[in-house]
Amino acid sequence: GEIDAEGLIAADYQPQALRAAIDAGPGPALDAQASKSFDWLVEDLRDGRTPMDARIQWFAVDPDQDDNPTDALLQRATTNHAVTEVLASLTPTYFDYQTLRDALAATPKADAKRREAIRINMDRWRWLPRDLGNIYLITNVPEFQLRLTVNGKPIRTYRTVVGKPGKTATPQLAEKVQNVVFNPTWTVPQSIVVGEGLGAKLAGNPKSALRQGYKVTRAADGTISIVQQPGNRNSLGRMKIDMPNPHAIYLHDTPSKSLFNAPVRAFSHGCIRTERAVELGMTMAILGAGMSQQDAVASFEAMKYRKVPMTRSFPVYLVYMTLGSDINGQLSAFGDIYGRDKPVADSFRAARQLHTTQRASTEA
Image (tube, rainbow, N blue to C red; front, side, top):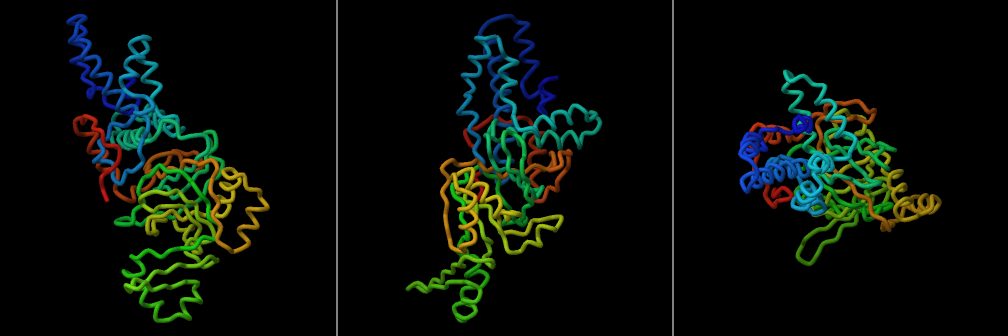
């Protein structure tokens, strides 16, 4: 019953074999079976049941198995006769996990579809660190919202625009905010310089380039690079929240504010455009770099590039939940914009797979 309540499947942990071993009495066979059932349950409660190949674009590495290794947990459970306590200590602390758990308890067995949706999203919370930290940013991609969370409570929410489905879908990450950049420059990606022909267009028309705030340079080998200078027309707006990662994803302001009013906001090249990003960046600079409000306002108004490194870095999580609490605290379904539910649902219908050492997706 307890296992089902956590959205897992009791049969995965070989209860019949365990019952038979218990009936056969103490000895090596019972020890081996009990350890196996316990280890598998620990792994799924701590790290999630879904195999890595079913976690599309999942690059948020979960440290829980390093912080709480399985053998140490087994040791603790057997020495202190505390199996239930040890298992309970593994479930996510994020408030939505409990919300989903309650929803699962309240959903009749006959409503298989709803129960599956709850189960999928409970498992996704287990893929993340059990404790997300004291102050962090979390954005649920299909909800098009970002929360600034302090001591487990969202204190501010911001609408977002995320990557459009396909090649530019936003990946799932767990990174750290390391800098905020007032009045950022934007180095135009080569996919736009070459692929969309911007380089050729601007190189042939220096006046137009200057008017739009682009600095165009041509290297000796003919490669054109374009950097958009700070200002209101800059594609990153007036603020960039920098969280270095191999996917070049960050949070930023935008000059196209009207897009925040669209009901489905999946338009970007993968980065997260954030409503009121200037306010958020200033808040981060004040909380994370001890900047005074006056200095933050002056830096913004100067219209000059200024990078402010954080003296305390904040975690930032880009998650993908299709069922959860919305910003008004109501349990809501969010559109599966990237089709990431099916592989997880399929893995729940299939037999449990043995865990491997893989921690993230191997996709490009």
